[in-house]
Image 1: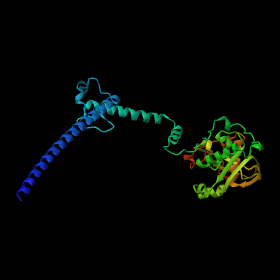
Image 2: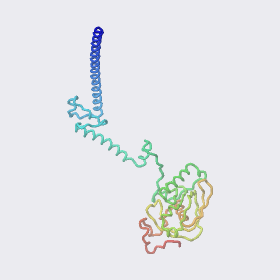
Image 3: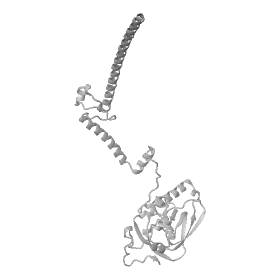
Image 4: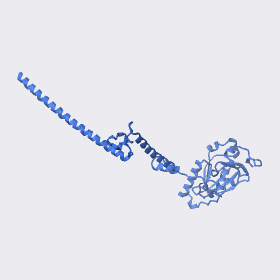
Length: 321
């Protein structure tokens, strides 16, 4: 039993020896690994510090340049700022960032609204909005010269269809109840008109009745020709998208007939009375180079805000003559 006991003690001693050696080697490897890891971290930090100096160089007077070992992590504005960062560098970094954003904003603001919208769509920052022609204002020669007729062969073409679609869009966007091609700068004999229940609802009930105003669907007339159907006339205020913000009293025929061609090139005829007849006369005048102020009753021209003021003495009363 004793022999077996002695052999057991020796085995235990050898085992302890092996354990100590193993732990020693392990500590050695761990120490070596730690020093290697520390060296790598140090090299990485030095590389980052050198890279940061290339991006944001510090002033030559800075004490950081006097002792490169004093360089600290807070010199990387993209990572973050530490509390103990040098005040000089903070102000410099902030100035650089402010200058960048300021320049970007000023450049965008210097662009026109249309070019900004186009750029936004192109860069994927928004959807492209359709661009419609602007309404030509009184004083432009295109409004004071006769328009030319549209050739039969042109009707239905892509060009004429585009003009018509633009006219409809501009009229509805304004909004208005009629538009002639010269009002978007195109000297062609094309008119569009439409009066809806919604538009009519904005007027006073007594005005609607006096003007004999009723809704009608969209009309597109190419090369219209107008003729009166009776000698009866009416006096009412009317306005124009090309003379925006003003109104004047104009005498118009109560009943008219307009013939022309549809957008498909087929002949068409419109018999109109009341307010629709007035709209047709107004738009056909545009095709002859005439705007409503050329026909207005003298001394009735006024701003929209003054419509409710009484007419000057000597002016005719509003209504059917």
